[in-house]
Length: 499
Image (cartoon, rainbow, N blue to C red; front, side, top):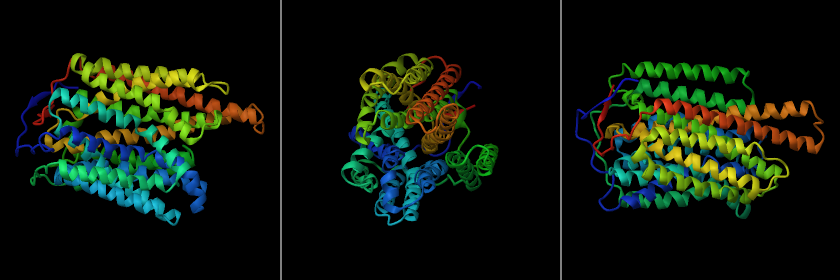
């Protein structure tokens, strides 16, 4: 990519600080809580699905839509949500997203039938698409000091990386001891605390009335992302050869190409290409995308292994992931506060991906006789360390240096990459795992319980290998794309990046 030149932005002055003086760390707690609510909602409902299915009497094919409805709305509207935060103010967008998410959660928790539950999940995705980019852009504009920013992003990165595991634990606890409906009702408590904190602590950011919404770009990217996410989600219930799968993927990809073409010509683009074309930022987007793909292999298939092969309860499964969360948090803090300011991202992010890949390869050795402490815990800690090293640093750099008016859409792009990565991981790894299981049973007795258990192990191992491969490829890409050296410090008056 071309060498970048940093210049001061033209136009109106940047918005004022996004927080009242002296309250930055309380604001971090509010933002982290809101982000945790959005991230864990992608997994917390999964554990409750069997109970919800029994209570509302819907089919196995319908069960997929409880997950897919959220992913479709969230993934396809994130860029629009990020631009709305830039247009109308980050605080108001954040608060509207919180209230809407809470209302949608209440509707889902009280759902009398399948149709209402799916609608509520889609609404959660819509308001999550407002909330997530607003939260990340608020973090970017609140913490402008380099050292404080590093600490804030280590916390945020830990939440983003560990949210899925926390969702598994919380979902298991609520389902076992209360009801599946509480996996949705619990969001009311998260949202209430974050809403009060947001109202009290966040200062209103100025709105730049000269910026207009790019309607053609919004339509192109929303429809394109919808097609891609739906195409990958369709693989779970059908296969790669199904017309709905490849048609959606082809059309969605074509619309995204058209979106990029339009962004080069639009007078006020939805996603200014200067946000994407900085080398460090582009590499960070790639890292977040690949981490979304690779982490799916950890959370989903290790959950299956613990419950199906080792007979863990949902709560025990969630607790099993806690050491990984601890390792991830420690590594994220060291990455952003100790390593990134000294050596830059080029050694850190690829190293984190390589460490995560090594941990996943280690998991391929699990069998029916494995124990948690001896065989599961060590690679899980290694994976946590690897993800912690790369996720906080890449998220920090993904929105570092953008102008204040682009902070929302840059934050939305980070969330979009993570969401698309998760959708790709769901489709690709599930398909590969199912194929490995079928191949094993084709040469064994499919009615023999032992052969069935061994086929499951074969499917898990295949998913771990491929997840490791994704991380390994990501490590090589990031090694070559990231610039050498320490990046220039970001500031609240972040310069525009012109290619």
